[in-house]
Length: 62
Length: 91
Image (cartoon, rainbow over all chains, first blue to last red; front, top):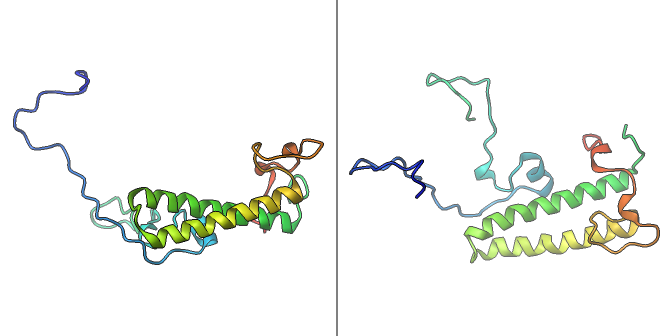
């Protein structure tokens, strides 16, 4: 490990753990829809909606 | 209007090629992590076939889209219009 960026973690909790559920392909967009939306998979379509600011602030997820 | 005139058919065909190509980008990414998903494989192979057909159709009619193709004389890869000269909002 590159010493510059790694420091000894004596028994502390892990920094982070990613949890990515496995995707199962089901429906797919039509080719023209997919190109427009930037994904073939409806389950992955998640445009930024800046105007909806919820209490937690940020509000960038539709 | 586009800098250099491009027929409706050419632009429509180009758009179909881009769409078929994008589907392949997506099925590729999905298949990388789901190599045994037969549905995704069928979809990928279908669009691979379609992409190949559309590409050869386009290149026969309008000139090379990619430098890897074969060209008549003169070298058709430099035919106008270039992608940035095409207004895809108006199909």
